[in-house]
Length: 313
Ligand SMILES: [Zn+2]
Image (cartoon, rainbow, N blue to C red; front, side):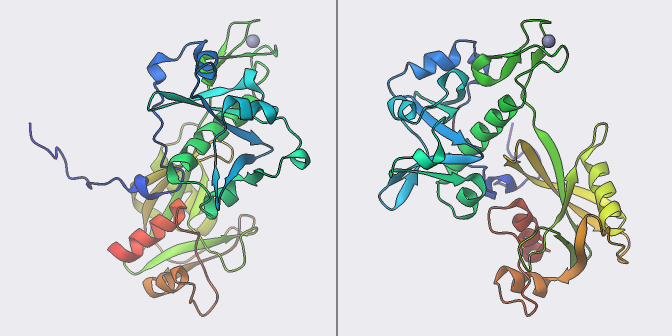
């Protein structure tokens, strides 16, 4: 057998987005109900701590470390009973837990910083940023699934944090990942970007929306683009995906070919939506656009969709 088996890029586009750098070996096939407690007993265990949508970072010189030893985590009142096992690196287990300490009681050496700032400002290396997406998403799911959706009884954490069990009715609940379609609609020389009502000044981005039950990715891309901009799409092509821990989504990035160019914007969803040329996009990326237009930062999947189109077609 010879490779490649099919015509695919040597490097996957998803490798280049933020939150994609997780290198932890999940060892999902080995998880048991004792996984988290056994991992915590390991001398080299490292624990990531979250609190109120923020990560508790250890100040190390000019930078930050996203992990704590078990002893350090306990001084920050970590909720060890609810710890989830992310996986292993070089034999050492990595976990995530809620930090119980009040944020105004944090020692000088610990800073609580929200996920978005950590991502945008590049405060952690890609590996730790990816692990943060895993831990933050899992802990957020646990925080909102303490009770059985079927019978209402309190549920119990199992399988290292990858399951909750209802002792009353026996139902097993599994962590969710919510798919979101994010799409760049293109013509031979223009791409479609919109402005949400809460975007920073001047920012335009690819359109996006949740994929609904019973919908393919392509159908969701076509529906959202028609609803938000009045543009009908022909061919839709998948490009890359991005874990997005707000709280536990997977952004699925696609390109769509526009069949019409007369925009009918949905004023409830968007403040503005319009076509941009490649020159517009290059100026926005360089922050030199005469109208002050910018696009999302490098690391955001929208940035990669826009840049890929501008540079490759
Ligand atoms: Zn139940």
